[in-house]
Length: 331
Ligand SMILES: [Zn+2]
Image 1 (cartoon, helix red, strand yellow):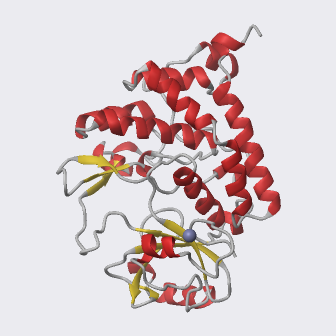
Image 2 (cartoon, rainbow, N blue to C red; image 1 turned 30 degrees about the vertical axis):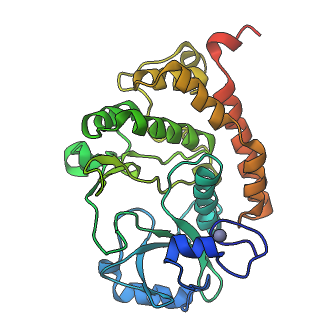
């Protein structure tokens, strides 16, 4: 099989590297000791305590010797099984999140939460991620998502508060609270481009967080999490979860097509204080890596039809990232 962590070929379970990164080197099997129906029953008994807020049901796990067990307290991992609902291809949600996260880290070297696919004993897939706010010694880092940083909640900003915001405002908050802004803002710019490339239309304000680094005593962006191609599940999904600009600004290209393309992201990079040469460099990085992406997606746990659909969607987005209305419209 391909390693359900890094997708390395011809292994029996998680490869050694993944065991080290995910489980501190312990020999954890990629098959859980309980089935999905057993999990659902356990969940019903303790549903309120076990669930972490969010649309998708999530559950905490911890390691007991070499075994992952459900837990109410001291969870070190979050398990996200196949969700139920109206959208299409829901069976593929765990594999989609997994390949999207792996692409972010393996192809684009974006910092991401450690993650893998895991299987219930009836072989149903789930996605597992290791909490990055808990240190090996058990201490919890001080962490806030950007809704908390911006001090907005459903009560103060309405039902749609996670989406009634924009990426430029988040960058302003980043500048206010993060000393190493010049470094962190490039990661932030990269993830915005990445989300566009992979059709992640759900990168809302709570999907970005900062935490206090114990060594530097400064706030930094946390590793990225919840990266998924939402277009595989929601037809007609929006291009970006939030608008780029805080003031409703529109480039000529946007006015013409009402779609974001190169000019919009350039303007965005400019506004958040990234030098022109660095914007160009980051654009190059984010529109390259095509061969690596194809290889990795083909090793993923998506079915063949979804692999093809995913790669087609990326190609279309890449074209849009390369297209500049201001310079290409005449040609
Ligand atoms: Zn691996």
